[in-house]
Length: 249
Ligand SMILES: Nc1ncnc2c1ncn2[C@@H]1O[C@H](COP(=O)(O)OP(=O)(O)OP(=O)(O)O)[C@@H](O)[C@H]1O
Ligand SMILES: [Mg+2]
Image 1 (tube, rainbow, N blue to C red):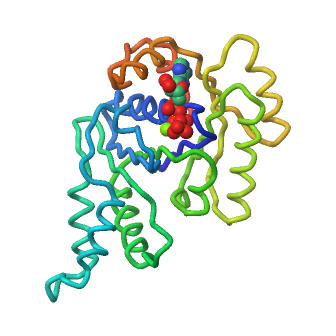
Image 2 (image 1 turned 30 degrees about the vertical axis):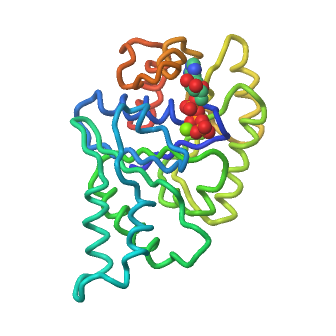
């Protein structure tokens, strides 16, 4: 199952994505792949892992040396090998960082092959969790075209719901189908939830869960500590566990 976390800038996509990785990893039952597809990435920090090479790096290197590949070595097998090397493995999950997206030049062939390799790789996991960049670019770039569950994170502003509605509309326009799309209300404070539920309902979106403002999350991010180390009973993590339960069933 592929789960993507999207939404407008700064709403808490990376926090929700990493807590989702943690919630699923805690069950000790699944193979989990986290994909950081935000070029300005910080999912690895939140998960407490270091990334040395991104898919963007691999693409650039390949394009630099494509004329000097020894004969008989195909692009594809070279790229497969490089993607495997870029995969960061930990005890509870693996991580792949997409890095910089393709430039305006004609990188199409390399991109196409890379996408195929990543899709095949993703098929080896029970759960793939994608932290997307802010906004809607991921849809037009088709990073999120095979997603089963699209989670759109919103703050407590009505604009967050508007972004969620746009993601849904644009996906329909581009003929990208998700099995389900849900809103996650993040940093909820007393009295904000009901109104947002109502807005979401008006644009035909379902709220799958509400994550409270959490002092620990703020403090850990402030100090640059991985969210994987948050206390197990911290409110935001408990809320995300509840969301994971609804998704996993
Ligand atoms: N539930 C929460 N409680 C407290 N602080 C939170 C919560 N969710 C997010 N934050 C804080 O809000 C800030 C933005 O969160 P995060 O980086 O996850 O957003 P984002 O949507 O991934 O941002 P970007 O669009 O830049 O990728 C961080 O400083 C984070 O600590
Ligand atoms: Mg982020």
